[in-house]
Length: 236
Ligand code: ADP
Image (cartoon, rainbow, N blue to C red; front, side, top):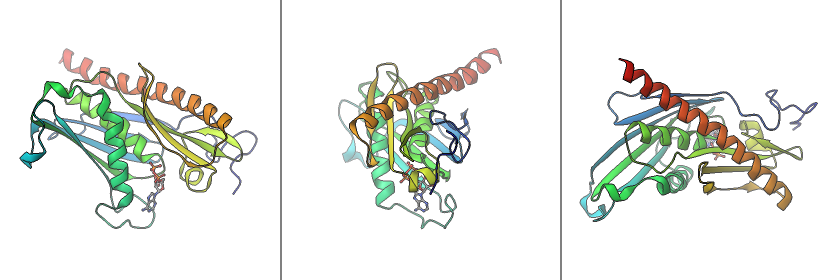
Protein backbone atom coordinates (compact mmCIF):
# COMPACT_ATOMS: atom_id res chain seq x y z
CA UNK A 1 0.00 0.00 0.00
CA UNK A 2 1.25 3.47 -0.90
CA UNK A 3 0.86 5.92 1.96
CA UNK A 4 2.80 9.04 1.05
CA UNK A 5 2.27 11.13 -2.09
CA UNK A 6 4.04 14.47 -2.64
CA UNK A 7 4.77 14.69 1.06
CA UNK A 8 1.09 14.27 1.99
CA UNK A 9 -0.72 11.35 3.61
CA UNK A 10 -3.77 9.38 2.43
CA UNK A 11 -6.11 11.88 4.11
CA UNK A 12 -4.08 14.85 2.81
CA UNK A 13 -2.39 15.63 6.11
CA UNK A 14 1.26 16.49 6.58
CA UNK A 15 3.38 13.99 8.55
CA UNK A 16 3.27 16.19 11.67
CA UNK A 17 -0.42 17.09 11.52
CA UNK A 18 -3.15 15.92 13.93
CA UNK A 19 -6.65 15.04 12.73
CA UNK A 20 -9.42 17.49 13.68
CA UNK A 21 -10.30 17.05 17.37
CA UNK A 22 -13.35 18.25 19.29
CA UNK A 23 -14.06 17.93 23.02
CA UNK A 24 -17.50 18.30 24.58
CA UNK A 25 -17.33 18.51 28.38
CA UNK A 26 -20.26 17.21 30.45
CA UNK A 27 -22.07 15.43 27.63
CA UNK A 28 -23.84 13.04 30.04
CA UNK A 29 -26.24 14.24 32.73
CA UNK A 30 -26.13 11.27 35.06
CA UNK A 31 -22.39 10.78 35.32
CA UNK A 32 -20.37 12.80 37.86
CA UNK A 33 -18.12 13.84 35.01
CA UNK A 34 -18.13 13.14 31.30
CA UNK A 35 -16.59 14.06 28.00
CA UNK A 36 -17.42 13.28 24.38
CA UNK A 37 -14.56 13.37 21.90
CA UNK A 38 -14.39 13.30 18.15
CA UNK A 39 -10.87 12.66 16.97
CA UNK A 40 -10.80 12.23 13.21
CA UNK A 41 -13.08 9.24 12.59
CA UNK A 42 -13.13 8.23 16.26
CA UNK A 43 -16.20 8.97 18.37
CA UNK A 44 -15.65 8.27 22.03
CA UNK A 45 -17.46 8.98 25.26
CA UNK A 46 -15.99 8.86 28.77
CA UNK A 47 -18.06 8.77 31.95
CA UNK A 48 -16.65 9.13 35.45
CA UNK A 49 -18.43 8.03 38.64
CA UNK A 50 -17.08 8.83 42.09
CA UNK A 51 -15.32 9.13 44.33
CA UNK A 52 -17.85 6.65 45.75
CA UNK A 53 -18.04 3.54 47.94
CA UNK A 54 -16.20 0.46 46.67
CA UNK A 55 -18.16 -2.66 45.76
CA UNK A 56 -17.07 -5.37 46.32
CA UNK A 57 -15.79 -4.04 49.66
CA UNK A 58 -12.67 -6.20 49.82
CA UNK A 59 -11.17 -4.15 46.96
CA UNK A 60 -11.06 -0.98 49.06
CA UNK A 61 -7.77 0.51 50.23
CA UNK A 62 -7.49 2.01 53.71
CA UNK A 63 -5.51 5.10 52.72
CA UNK A 64 -6.41 5.90 49.13
CA UNK A 65 -9.00 5.64 46.39
CA UNK A 66 -8.76 2.87 43.81
CA UNK A 67 -9.10 3.68 40.12
CA UNK A 68 -11.02 1.39 37.77
CA UNK A 69 -11.05 1.88 34.01
CA UNK A 70 -13.16 0.03 31.47
CA UNK A 71 -12.48 0.48 27.77
CA UNK A 72 -15.26 -0.97 25.62
CA UNK A 73 -15.82 -1.04 21.90
CA UNK A 74 -19.44 -0.93 20.73
CA UNK A 75 -20.33 -3.75 18.36
CA UNK A 76 -21.22 -1.14 15.70
CA UNK A 77 -17.97 0.83 16.11
CA UNK A 78 -16.01 -1.06 13.45
CA UNK A 79 -16.75 -2.17 9.90
CA UNK A 80 -17.44 -5.82 10.69
CA UNK A 81 -19.69 -6.16 13.73
CA UNK A 82 -17.51 -6.66 16.79
CA UNK A 83 -18.60 -9.38 19.19
CA UNK A 84 -19.88 -7.53 22.27
CA UNK A 85 -18.16 -7.80 25.63
CA UNK A 86 -14.60 -7.86 26.89
CA UNK A 87 -11.84 -9.57 24.93
CA UNK A 88 -8.07 -9.76 25.27
CA UNK A 89 -7.55 -6.47 23.47
CA UNK A 90 -10.04 -4.45 25.55
CA UNK A 91 -8.75 -5.93 28.81
CA UNK A 92 -5.20 -4.91 27.88
CA UNK A 93 -6.26 -1.44 26.76
CA UNK A 94 -8.26 -0.94 29.97
CA UNK A 95 -5.19 -1.84 32.01
CA UNK A 96 -2.68 0.38 30.19
CA UNK A 97 -5.17 3.27 30.06
CA UNK A 98 -5.75 3.07 33.82
CA UNK A 99 -2.00 3.06 34.36
CA UNK A 100 -1.66 6.06 32.04
CA UNK A 101 -4.08 8.18 34.08
CA UNK A 102 -3.54 6.85 37.60
CA UNK A 103 -0.29 8.75 38.37
CA UNK A 104 -1.88 12.23 38.19
CA UNK A 105 -4.92 11.45 40.38
CA UNK A 106 -4.49 12.47 44.02
CA UNK A 107 -5.86 9.22 45.42
CA UNK A 108 -4.90 9.92 49.05
CA UNK A 109 -7.77 12.41 49.32
CA UNK A 110 -10.36 9.63 49.14
CA UNK A 111 -9.55 6.61 51.30
CA UNK A 112 -11.84 3.56 50.95
CA UNK A 113 -13.32 4.98 47.73
CA UNK A 114 -13.32 4.17 44.07
CA UNK A 115 -13.22 6.35 41.00
CA UNK A 116 -14.72 4.47 38.06
CA UNK A 117 -13.97 5.47 34.49
CA UNK A 118 -15.98 4.06 31.59
CA UNK A 119 -14.82 4.64 28.03
CA UNK A 120 -17.13 3.66 25.21
CA UNK A 121 -15.85 3.60 21.64
CA UNK A 122 -18.84 4.44 19.45
CA UNK A 123 -16.86 4.69 16.22
CA UNK A 124 -13.28 3.52 15.71
CA UNK A 125 -10.65 4.73 13.27
CA UNK A 126 -7.30 4.04 14.99
CA UNK A 127 -6.04 5.75 18.09
CA UNK A 128 -9.09 4.82 20.15
CA UNK A 129 -7.07 4.17 23.31
CA UNK A 130 -5.59 7.66 23.00
CA UNK A 131 -8.97 9.28 22.32
CA UNK A 132 -10.33 7.38 25.35
CA UNK A 133 -7.52 8.56 27.62
CA UNK A 134 -7.96 12.17 26.45
CA UNK A 135 -11.71 11.98 27.09
CA UNK A 136 -11.26 10.25 30.45
CA UNK A 137 -8.81 12.87 31.61
CA UNK A 138 -11.26 15.69 30.82
CA UNK A 139 -14.17 13.72 32.35
CA UNK A 140 -12.18 13.33 35.59
CA UNK A 141 -11.61 17.07 35.72
CA UNK A 142 -15.32 17.60 34.99
CA UNK A 143 -16.14 15.32 37.95
CA UNK A 144 -13.96 17.51 40.16
CA UNK A 145 -11.46 14.74 40.88
CA UNK A 146 -8.26 16.36 42.18
CA UNK A 147 -5.37 15.82 39.77
CA UNK A 148 -1.80 17.02 39.51
CA UNK A 149 -2.25 17.57 35.78
CA UNK A 150 -4.10 16.42 32.67
CA UNK A 151 -3.00 13.37 30.71
CA UNK A 152 -2.86 13.79 26.95
CA UNK A 153 -2.36 11.03 24.43
CA UNK A 154 -1.77 10.44 20.74
CA UNK A 155 -0.17 7.86 18.49
CA UNK A 156 2.89 8.25 16.31
CA UNK A 157 4.20 5.76 13.82
CA UNK A 158 5.89 5.11 10.52
CA UNK A 159 4.51 4.69 7.01
CA UNK A 160 6.54 4.60 3.76
CA UNK A 161 9.73 5.22 5.80
CA UNK A 162 8.20 8.45 7.13
CA UNK A 163 7.57 9.18 10.82
CA UNK A 164 3.97 10.42 11.13
CA UNK A 165 1.70 11.79 13.85
CA UNK A 166 -1.79 10.46 14.67
CA UNK A 167 -2.32 7.50 12.36
CA UNK A 168 -5.61 6.75 10.59
CA UNK A 169 -6.82 3.16 10.41
CA UNK A 170 -5.08 2.22 7.16
CA UNK A 171 -1.79 3.65 8.43
CA UNK A 172 -2.23 1.86 11.76
CA UNK A 173 -3.22 -1.50 10.27
CA UNK A 174 -0.88 -1.63 7.27
CA UNK A 175 1.95 0.78 8.17
CA UNK A 176 5.42 -0.02 9.50
CA UNK A 177 5.01 1.07 13.12
CA UNK A 178 2.38 2.34 15.54
CA UNK A 179 3.36 3.85 18.87
CA UNK A 180 0.70 5.31 21.17
CA UNK A 181 2.00 7.53 23.98
CA UNK A 182 0.37 9.38 26.87
CA UNK A 183 1.91 12.01 29.08
CA UNK A 184 1.48 14.90 31.47
CA UNK A 185 2.80 17.64 29.23
CA UNK A 186 3.39 19.96 32.18
CA UNK A 187 5.93 17.68 33.85
CA UNK A 188 6.99 15.75 30.75
CA UNK A 189 6.22 12.47 32.53
CA UNK A 190 5.35 9.74 30.00
CA UNK A 191 2.70 7.41 31.45
CA UNK A 192 2.04 5.17 28.44
CA UNK A 193 4.30 4.07 25.63
CA UNK A 194 3.56 1.04 23.47
CA UNK A 195 4.89 0.02 20.12
CA UNK A 196 3.85 -2.30 17.31
CA UNK A 197 6.22 -2.76 14.38
CA UNK A 198 9.78 -1.56 13.94
CA UNK A 199 11.57 1.76 14.40
CA UNK A 200 15.30 2.43 14.45
CA UNK A 201 16.57 4.22 17.56
CA UNK A 202 16.80 7.39 15.51
CA UNK A 203 13.22 7.04 14.27
CA UNK A 204 12.06 6.21 17.79
CA UNK A 205 13.54 9.45 19.11
CA UNK A 206 12.01 11.39 16.24
CA UNK A 207 8.62 9.73 16.86
CA UNK A 208 8.76 10.47 20.59
CA UNK A 209 9.49 14.14 19.92
CA UNK A 210 6.61 14.32 17.43
CA UNK A 211 4.31 12.57 19.90
CA UNK A 212 5.21 15.06 22.62
CA UNK A 213 4.31 17.93 20.31
CA UNK A 214 1.00 16.21 19.48
CA UNK A 215 0.22 15.70 23.18
CA UNK A 216 1.00 19.36 23.88
CA UNK A 217 -1.53 20.47 21.24
CA UNK A 218 -4.13 18.09 22.64
CA UNK A 219 -3.49 19.30 26.22
CA UNK A 220 -4.22 22.82 25.02
CA UNK A 221 -7.56 21.67 23.52
CA UNK A 222 -8.47 19.79 26.72
CA UNK A 223 -7.74 22.83 28.85
CA UNK A 224 -9.65 25.08 26.47
CA UNK A 225 -12.71 22.78 26.52
CA UNK A 226 -12.76 22.79 30.34
CA UNK A 227 -12.33 26.56 30.52
CA UNK A 228 -15.16 27.06 28.01
CA UNK A 229 -17.54 24.91 30.03
CA UNK A 230 -16.77 26.40 33.43
CA UNK A 231 -16.43 29.98 32.30
CA UNK A 232 -19.90 29.64 30.76
CA UNK A 233 -21.35 28.43 34.07
CA UNK A 234 -19.88 31.34 36.01
CA UNK A 235 -21.84 33.75 33.89
CA UNK A 236 -25.18 31.95 34.23
P1 ADP B 1 -6.12 1.84 18.84
O1 ADP B 1 -7.56 2.03 18.47
O2 ADP B 1 -5.81 2.36 20.19
O3 ADP B 1 -5.19 2.36 17.77
P2 ADP B 1 -5.43 -0.81 17.86
O4 ADP B 1 -4.10 -0.41 17.31
O5 ADP B 1 -5.57 -2.15 18.52
O6 ADP B 1 -5.90 0.26 18.95
O7 ADP B 1 -6.55 -0.75 16.75
C1 ADP B 1 -6.43 0.09 15.65
C2 ADP B 1 -7.75 0.19 14.94
O8 ADP B 1 -8.10 -1.06 14.35
C3 ADP B 1 -8.95 0.52 15.85
O9 ADP B 1 -9.05 1.89 16.17
C4 ADP B 1 -10.09 0.05 14.97
O10 ADP B 1 -10.38 1.00 13.97
C5 ADP B 1 -9.50 -1.21 14.34
N1 ADP B 1 -9.92 -2.37 15.15
C6 ADP B 1 -9.49 -2.74 16.37
N2 ADP B 1 -10.12 -3.85 16.82
C7 ADP B 1 -10.99 -4.20 15.85
C8 ADP B 1 -11.94 -5.26 15.68
N3 ADP B 1 -12.15 -6.19 16.62
N4 ADP B 1 -12.64 -5.29 14.52
C9 ADP B 1 -12.44 -4.37 13.55
N5 ADP B 1 -11.57 -3.35 13.66
C10 ADP B 1 -10.85 -3.26 14.77
